[in-house]
Image 1 (cartoon, rainbow over the protein chains, first blue to last red):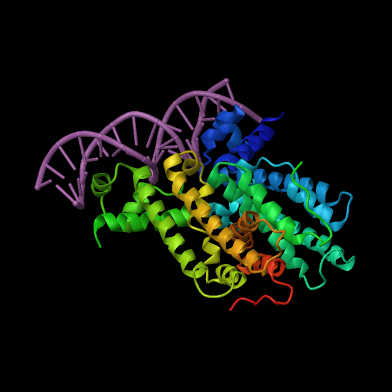
Image 2: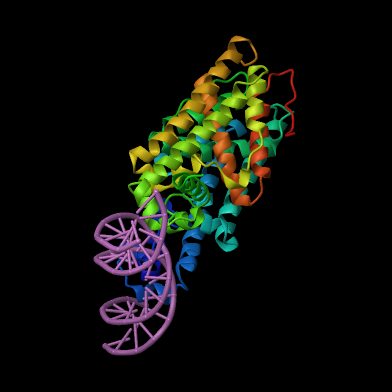
Amino acid sequence: MSTSERLIESTRALLWERGYVGTSPKAILERAGAGQGSMYHHFKGKPDLALAAIRRTAEEMRATAAGVLDGPGTPYERIEAYLLRERDVLRGCPVGRLTMDPDVIADDALRAPVDETLDWLRARLAGIVEEGREQGEFAPGLDSEEIAAAVVATVQGGYVLARASGSPAAFDAGVRGLLALLAPQDRQPRTRP
Amino acid sequence: MSTSERLIESTRALLWERGYVGTSPKAILERAGAGQGSMYHHFKGKPDLALAAIRRTAEEMRATAAGVLDGPGTPYERIEAYLLRERDVLRGCPVGRLTMDPDVIADDALRAPVDETLDWLRARLAGIVEEGREQGEFAPGLDSEEIAAAVVATVQGGYVLARASGSPAAFDAGVRGLLALLAPQDRQPRTRP
DNA sequence: GTCTATATCCCGATAGAC
DNA sequence: GTCTATCGGGATATAGAC
């Protein structure tokens, strides 16, 4: 793995763990096993390296979500699969957590990949809800965009509840609550595998 | 206003804006118009001052939520009022945002007020859902605890979506989606006042 | 490309005068 | 109670040798 790669991967891990404000170049270099010179040779500085790391994390999250959402099953089943998929709940969302970083929100370049990723996810879910509405799996009165926003918000907020309590249970509870509300009348939602 | 009060209020504002890791004693002192000595006279250090600030913010949030949840109306209407109440959406939740602060989560004393507040809110909402179930406003098959968790998660996650996009619209969309799912069959959810 | 040395400023805390 | 002075260390970046 190249030095530049190691720097990006170290930054991704630290951004997830400690956020942008809490991540120092020194910590990145130590984790990557590199010296100061390497970092400033490959990147313009902390924001530039962080941008590379955030872009990659965003891409990865998108690919993971797409893997589940493009899978088999009815619209409800695909949303259920997305909500119940394995997650390292207590670590939080590596993309969503960046919205609580003032220096990320203040910098349009850093915020853009975060915004685009969550927006893509919302739009993809809205499409699936719309499908389900047309097929009669969901009530025709529902607004697909609003339901999609509620789904993404429940996941992001679930991380907050889990981290506050120090246990993934609250995340699971929120997700099950949403699934129960969303479930077609003739169906009992599954519990987590 | 006493110096000690000004220190706590300055810390509250900065914790909300920049989080624990992003808030320095120096910034607190400047905003409070105090010198170093004052802070270390009244408080043992940064964590001690932060604890006082977090406790007060937690109390305040609890009081605000109670004001709405104890209000008039059917259970659905009270939950609706809570979800649609005026919020400074783009600033995020002053309590929930602390869960993304690694140094807060790592310190049980700092995490406790955060956990207790969100847990209190969840329990209070669960009681209201339970009421609604008994009165037939909500489906008897619903789990009150799970619905309550979904409600709190939608709010917390709504802040994430809003801050990512730089607009409160996504928060409102998520909340409306949840209300549509929760609404008794014979009822159209209101839009935000 | 990568290293070490250095620069400047800020962090969190302590000491001690007033 | 409040102030300024000072501390050791870290944050972020630059310089320049190899």
